[in-house]
Each structure stands twice: as C-alpha cells, then as structure tokens.
Length: 190
Image (tube, rainbow, N blue to C red; front, side, top):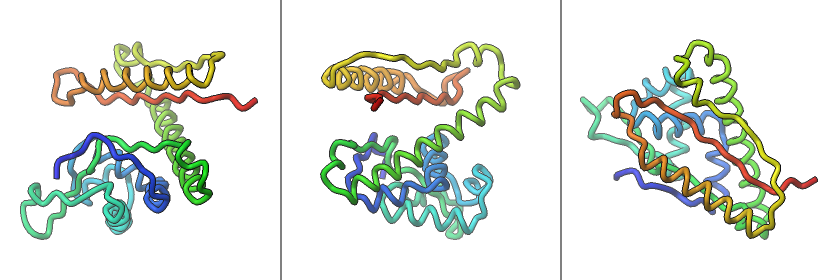
C-alpha cells in the first residue's frame, strides 16, 4: 500500500491507541524518515526492541502503520511504514459523544506534550546549528479578536499555507533539512 495523504479519525479506540508517547514518536519517525526496521526505530527513539514491536503492533491494529516487506532482505527482517502522511480529527465532531470527546482530549494532550518535547529538544541543540537555519526559526503568538466564522477562515488559510509548503517539501533536494511546522488557533476561553 502506498502512503495516503491523510486519515480522518472518528473512532475513539484508534484515538486512544495513538495517544501514547511512544506510538506518536514511532509514527512520526516513519512519516519523516520513511520505512524502517524495528531495530532502526529502536535506535532512533531509544526504546527497547520488544517495546517498539509491541507499539508497532498496536499502531498496525488501528491502521496507522503496516509492514513493508519489499524492503526486507530476508524473511526475518521486518520493515514498517506509515499508512498516512497526516492524521486529523474534528473536535466539533466529538462534542456530542462523551467517549469520543474524552478520546479526542487524550490524543490532543498527548500531541501537545509531543510538540513541547520536540521544541524543548530543538532549544537544547539550537546553539550547535548552522546560523542560517537558526535565522529561519520562528516563535510567536498573536492576540486576535475574531468571529467564529473568521476563526474558521483563519484555519483554512493556515491549512492552505501548510499544504503549499508541503508541496515544495522534498527530502532529496540539496540543502533541504527536516523542519517542523506547528500551529494552533483557538478561542481563548477567558
């Protein structure tokens, strides 16, 4: 199977399965670096091979990853790949169902923790990077006064911007490096 562009989640069981820090890291590695063996993934995320195998099984059970046997040199070698380039879900779809709302909240908090972990790691190594890469780093927030329709429009603009840059993304292009784009836009409940 080739990697699909996106998977829209509605199943609370799949959301809860993905809401594990190790599973989020494994799925991220497979999406960014492409197919990998259990051993390669174990080294990349510094987890035991048995733990990686277990979590890959859980991800496969819910359709986030699958085996990639065409990469194996023999029957003992097991390769894995992500089945989707991106995962999405709509919080508004979860509001009426307490189980789905709880699963969505659990997954969103796990993703937020992962974002914070990734940014923290970047800050630890920033001083070792080429200044050209640091020059492009951005961190900001903005306080806006919008209507709910304008917030929906802002979301569409952000998604279109991310899609435009995703279209330019090519890991094989000379000088290209892995860049994280993380954004949030939400009504401040104060």
